[in-house]
Amino acid sequence: MLKTFILYQASIVLAFLFDLIFGDPRKFPHPVKFIGFLASKFEPFFRKKIKNERIAGTFFAVSIILVTLILTSSLVIGFYFINIYLSFFIAFLLIYTAIAYKDLKIESLKVLNSLKNNNIVEARKNLSMIVGRDTQNLNEDEIIRATVETIAENLVDGILSPIFYAFAGNAIFTLIFKAVSTLDSTVGYKNEKYKYFGTASAKIDDILNFIPARISLILIPIASFICKKDWKNSLKIALRDRNKNPSPNSGIPEAAFAGALGISLGGLNFYNKIPVYKPKIGDAKKDLDQKDIIDALKITTVSTILFIFFCIALFNIIFALIFLILMP
Image (cartoon, rainbow, N blue to C red; front, side, top):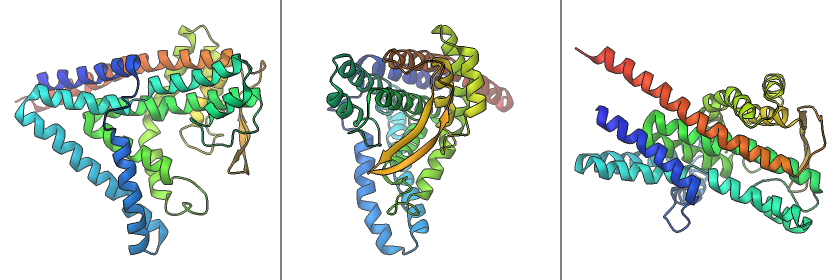
């Protein structure tokens, strides 16, 4: 049991290191693509079979989660009985595909490099690859703001949460989280089509991100201190403005980043030409600057490393307590 626990913890650290170096495996059969394929088939089926959109969306979300659970469990547990090291390797691959640190960094730097080259059109295009808002009319400040916001938001749901669930339940929990996150990105919108059908997917995503987001409230200020940014203001703004974002989780990292960088986030955005105003987060102690993107990425890197150490300590303590309780 102890050997298995150590191996699976090693698989998580190794998965992060591989993502840190290589990024998302482009040619590898990515689980998210499979989940997206399932969603495209299940959505019309449940819409046709169940007329109440909210109920249909609930069955849709639960079905995707159950399929993910069954397939991932079959892989990890099945290979465990064949060979523990093969199971360890499968777990490593699945967790590796779920962490999105390197890709977030690459795409954010593409936006930054376009701005450095004074190519605003290219910057807007690159930004459109990582945000859901309309980008075609954004100026430089708005592009920087959008980039910092997406870095902050993705720190939790793209990096910290997959790692947290990897420690909590290895690849099985990680893929379940990734399935929910994919569903939220697919149907979790408040537009006319998904206002009711996507409710369950959005709510489950909020629940699963709840703990990692609140851990980030402590870790981001610590990371800001290490990165020589304003950690006191990071904590202050995180506590003050964390509930201003309509999302119960995104507001925490956004507020912590805004405080650390001394900038203001939120404001007017357009989604499919429809204006959406989000409350201002943080105090504009200075103007937005291209360097804010670099600083946000540095804070993201340090926060992730701190989070891994935190999870190792937390889950080892939990494992030790369980072991002591179960000892005869």
